[in-house]
Length: 108
Image (cartoon, rainbow, N blue to C red):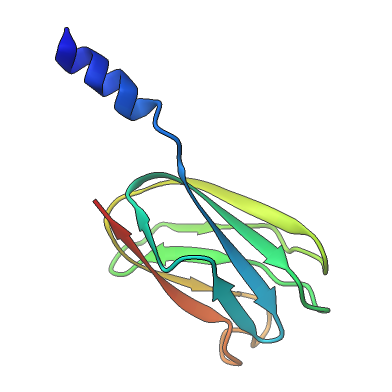
């Protein structure tokens, strides 16, 4: 019974939250490390150009992403993330090559 209650409590735990602030041509992370499990990652576009956010675990195949976000708007990725290192980038044109990439560490 107690194990079942602990399982329910864990499944109801609040998701990890973080924000990625986009400008030309930079990503600023509100935190560089989050706990594994459910996560809400918000892209806030403070730049003039549209941007998006892509997220992939290093060595993984699944890519999470947002829609294209116009200036002064936001979009959120909701995902269940296992521990590991994740690459974040903007997939629009050559934005990644211009510096719109970052690394996120997800810990147990």
